[in-house]
Length: 298
Image (cartoon, rainbow, N blue to C red):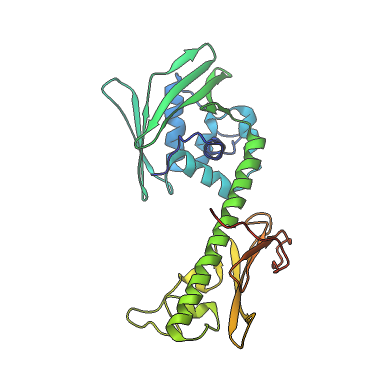
């Protein structure tokens, strides 16, 4: 299970961002009598994928800041917050100490949240929460307009504009790392094809899945259907055969470019005939062998 409560900068940012869903002017205000009820209601709404209801438990400033976020990002935040792969079914109960226990059941599995004793100090409250098989952290809430609202995760206060930028940068960086990994996967597949058939494939399509017991030079079953089609994880992939550095043999190059520059990635990549990866921010255009090398992983 993914851990909600590992308090690295990236994890805290991603989860804190999950507290953001656009508020509707027509939505009713939350009327929960205590901090634990408010937190349970927020988790329940996130589990169900109900962005409008979830927004009732945000501070006014944070709710307003999230109205500009795309719908896909709002849905992603709810998934991060509830640890569900999609809309789930919440089940609310109590343990022997009368602490709240909330389970979010979705197709990807069940996330279980166990609340501890709330500490309330005038207009602030802090509730320790443990996810089964995960670490523990504290959610902070603040009383606003007479009602409790989500304020913090651990020691991270919700600064929506700044966190949204950090979250977006993290997503871009993750897609770029994935693009490099996919280049290496394709390179290994091409080399495997060459060893098996004594030649290079003419296209990536020849590396794709074959029907059962029908592997052939036309369909070698070396990569998934997305990479064979030249598109995966927000990047487009190109393959070409090039002259080798020495002799009469041939080599190959692989390139990766973002589908939507600035959103799915900023850098383009080239895996050259020597197996080295070059990267450059070319506004979506292909990288070249003159561009800087990407350091090899340790």
